[in-house]
Image (tube, rainbow, N blue to C red):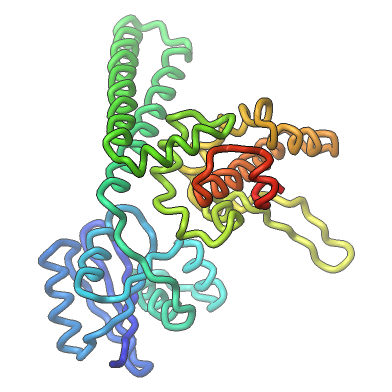
Amino acid sequence: MIQHTLGIDISKDTFDVTLLVDGISQHHQFENCSIGYKHLSVWLRKNQAVQIHACMEATGQYGEKLAEYLYQQGQTVSVVNPHRIKAYANSKLRRNKTDKADSELIAQYCSREIPGKWSPPSASFRDLQALVRRLDDLQNNYQQESNRLQSGTTTLEVVEDLKDHLSYLQEKIAHIKQAIQEHIDANPELKRRQSLLVSIPGIGALTAAKVLGEVRDICEFNSSRQLAAYAGVTSRNFYSGTSVHKKSRISKMGNTNLRKALYMSAISAKKHNPIVRPFCQRLSASGKKPKEVICASIHKLLHLIYGILKSGVPFDPNFLIKRGFAS
């Protein structure tokens, strides 16, 4: 049976699709709701597209329900990093950006690159991710309000309102933290993974929860380097000929939440982790700047996280060195 390619551009209220059939593209727009999904199925049948490979960008919650619907219909679904689509667009020298043009570009990318298959996350993972991201929102809000309070304002009503809001946010943060741990404790597999992660010096229970809320299954990664790339902490080098040697930087083309979750742990690990500490000391001695060392510490922690979750064995420097995860 012929598998057709469907490019999907998602927005809040609608989604645009482009179906590629024998090199000819057909476009349509649907409402981003359950009725729109059913209309999409009818439209696909009219165009004799029984089996499709649907592709969309990973743009948050707007596309999740549609991806799940298509998956449940037995279709192949890919959810790809938007940076990949952007790079493909640049390679095509594309100048126009409309919803229709974006869906066609995604369809062309899918047809050419054949991205990997997506499957829906488990309910336990989805709930944990929602909880840890809500905690991050609350903590960011708390920091913003704290900065406003310390900005020098003297208006009594404003000061009192800020203090009340900060107190309210503290209560909410404590409540969400408790809910996160209760959720993990109620799920034996999440509890097992958290216990493995907290065995790494520098990683506490909350950081472990945040990592587990962003990395749903370590088996989805073939290597620790893939995990580091997913977090966006692999280096980007710029060398050309013998004269152009720009400074290497981390890519940041990855999961921002995962990088942020490990930042403070990386600082702690730089001081106390028996594998990360000497590694960072060597970098500092070679002239690396403090921020570069911290980024390298995050990268090393991700290697350790991969090794421990993959092996199912708690932190042991000797074991990890033998397995090659600490090199």
